Length: 209
Ligand code: GLN
Image 1 (cartoon, rainbow, N blue to C red):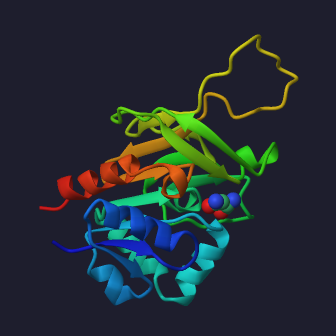
Image 2 (cartoon, rainbow, N blue to C red):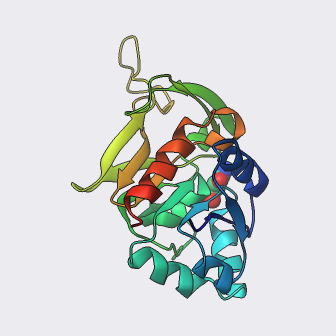
């Protein structure tokens, strides 16, 4: 079977490859158009979404990525990768571009307003055990279209509702799937086990035949 690619312009490339390896899946770094052409699906790691778009353009990958996503290649974006797969971005740079494909609006650096980084246990639909989720200046999904499955949210707020309190990110959508595309606000490759990657491997299998 063709390998799964990890977009290797920036970010946690090795960590994603290692998790895929641990699942017995062949994973390759993708930096060139011909490498992209040979993969069955693509992981888009975290990093900096504006920088990744810029690098993708420099490497001649921007249009090839858009074309493959538009023609149904399975893709899994984490953090900045979620932003890249989103159709709409709030709090982005002016005119921030994405690859698009997911009918969601993401808010960039949403959790980053309060804390740059946090770790939470997140229950994911379809997984038995909660995932230890690492958030690093993470986006959240502000709204999702009707075709988008919400696979995880942060825990709902407990205690009395205080409208004057800063938004601590409770009850926010942090994992979605739509057709062959999935995305997480958090970094499952850091300390999240392999369950989320297994879901992507299954998604690739379903959409490749
Ligand atoms: N804040 C970054 C962005 O806007 C995403 C951070 C990450 O990927 N860890 O692109």
